[in-house]
Image (cartoon, rainbow, N blue to C red; front, side):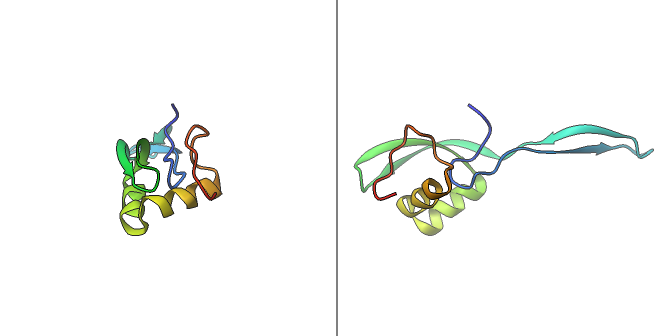
Length: 86
């Protein structure tokens, strides 16, 4: 599975390591991802999501159902997770 948040769509960015002598070598800035299980009360099921720290804050703020609706509209969720009403 790729390193992408299923709620916010965040993924790894590219950049440079810059040494003291200003030499640049390529590097990757990975996302702070967690595999979390959530109880989806509307569907009465447990679901497993790969979410970033920012995605967890979004779920806490909006609620799981609203956050998943937003993610489904933007196309961030996997195809195997079915969101009702989206």
